[in-house]
Amino acid sequence: MTELSTMKDGVANQAEASDRVLQILAEAGRLFASKGFEGTSMRDIALACGISKSLLYHHFSNKDEIYARVAVGSTLELYLFVRDRIPDGPPSQKIRAFMVATAEYFRRYRWAWIASTTAFWNDPDRQRHKERLTRRDRFENFLRGLIQEAIDAGEIRKVDVPMTGRLILSSLNWMHRWYNPNKSATPEQIAEIFFDMIFNGLRSGDLVELPGAEPPKAGRRKSR
Amino acid sequence: MTELSTMKDGVANQAEASDRVLQILAEAGRLFASKGFEGTSMRDIALACGISKSLLYHHFSNKDEIYARVAVGSTLELYLFVRDRIPDGPPSQKIRAFMVATAEYFRRYRWAWIASTTAFWNDPDRQRHKERLTRRDRFENFLRGLIQEAIDAGEIRKVDVPMTGRLILSSLNWMHRWYNPNKSATPEQIAEIFFDMIFNGLRSGDLVELPGAEPPKAGRRKSR
DNA sequence: GCCGGGCTTGACCGATCGGTCGGTGAAAAA
DNA sequence: TTTTTCACCGACCGATCGGTCAAGCCCGGC
Picture (cartoon, each protein chain N blue to C red):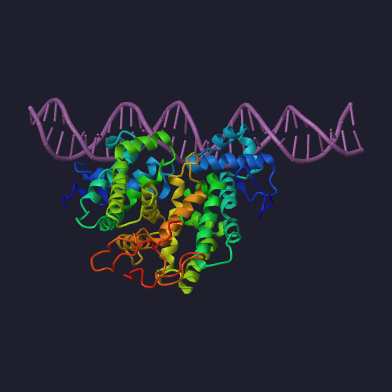
């Protein structure tokens, strides 16, 4: 409880909100996530909450504000949430922890996460507005810092840092499109698997290299 | 020209369509990609084409059909497009070619690709309908086959095949969210970088491993 | 000349959109 | 008791939605 802020019904960072407001945000998040912003009407939200449409306008000034509260609430604290879960230790393990923590956040605030990452991503104005509110750049820059740290420590190769960050975030950001909460693996477990694949690589260590490459060196890769 | 089908203005697989129809599909694809299906009105499409709204209904029976033509056209031939670009050779190189070919398809039909992957992804009925039309499963199963092939050949570790496929496709599917065609790297180049990272791993081979690992061996990794 | 048919249009439809309005009823404040 | 506050509602608004329709325009063939 009280980690960073009040968290309830999958709605993060809504400390001073009434139960009704939390209900509206939760239902709206679910609807925005599944039908999109334009695809969700104020009537839909009101119906899902079992209240009149007018009451939505009593608690929020308009549709945009509801969406903003959903999106900001789900993303604003992501950076802090993840940062506080990075242990001391080797940089590579920090990257692993970064991925697992992000996956945990995804699992906890799934609908709001989806609603936030899905809508308006191609509308420059609204996207900029959302960026400003959610400060997602802090989150991404934090990852790049960890990658650079791992390079400086010699734990990972001298790869392109922004590109590496994109690969790692892609594996997490695309998860909502195929993740099924009824299946066995948790998002955290999936994140660990992806970290293993990306960090250690898929390549088998004890077999021939690509054609024309240097001859194989047995046992050069730890099998973990 | 005539590779698999007529391709024009970024609209694939519309062999027998008139110029006007191709124009409508191209503009609609662009709009669907940037504003979403619900966010794009028939008036928007008509305006973008410089024609009346009625004319849209002369060429298409309704809005859904326009979207279907955009989405199907962009995805239906993806499997064939990619399959025909897989060379003979080591399975790992087939996976690399798979990624590069997919990236090429993305580059060529970018708007339609985005429109297709963005809309209705969470609506079970429409999603199932789209799956049936586009046969995207062939595409994904093809990749899994390549992965299994690489495992059987001993080129990659005994990883979880579906999960590996998801990681690879995530790196490609998320690209539309950050790729900027005005920047230097082409999608194909990006795909190669991602393949390198995923296949070879990020881990540095020539420095101290995690505690208890074998001593470093210089130059064991090709620098590409 | 004029005839037929595909391309194209503007006026129009009912439904639904986001949003507003005046008001109700109950509890808190006075 | 009276007044104020506040969660809440049904009716309604202008605008826009997807979609229809009858009629013109244009152009090659008779």
